[in-house]
Image 1 (spheres, rainbow, N blue to C red):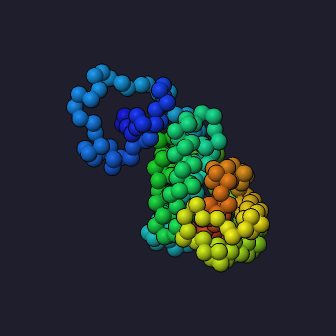
Image 2 (tube, rainbow, N blue to C red):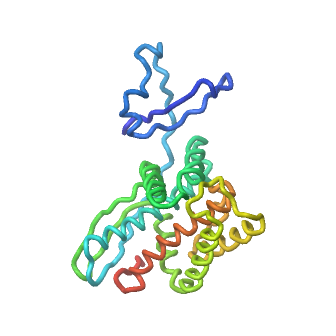
Image 3 (cartoon, helix red, strand yellow):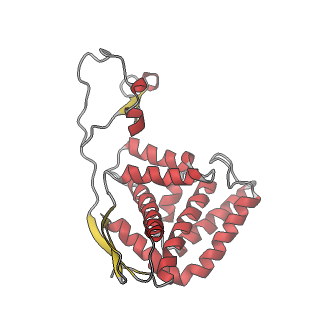
Length: 267
């Protein structure tokens, strides 16, 4: 297991404590960030308790019909995105998650994305890498023959929630799509689709309306904890809406495989 590395700034110290920030792999490899030899007179490493790992389980998705390599890629990418965000949101509200981890997740949701394009991809990729140590998602087996199967192993609770969201989406697909379009149009009209998280709606009333509609959209996707998602977004109505729309696009994409009869869900 690779030893974790951190940044710290003595200027933020209150005399007894100093905030530490997790270093990314590319930052660890960059020698410019390392202190000069002899800066520390002794070993200052502190042993931390291991992170609580999630209970892993295997989930098999039966597939049928014609599947190209690009189909497998799209399927896994969308599922991995949902796996990452559901895992991250779950960890934000847990008592066994450290303060530093909670700050990271909230900051990533609040600041990292919501400006369109690659910022969404980068966000989900970073979330996936972040949860990988505690609850990795692995592809155990892919059987290409028709009928075939895709066997995944990961956090049982998260995979079960994703499976339920896909299965339940059928009855809500039409209304959910209408609500998605309505919210998307509001963001466009307000000039918020590529705006930063600090930019709000033109009125408090509009923000409250979008918040209610966003919560309903999440409930239509069988998301059991919309309030936890809102809290993870630091109660930012714009971010809350954009995250919900991003989740919708991924659930809708996975559901399309199910609706076309090309994928069936685990029992």
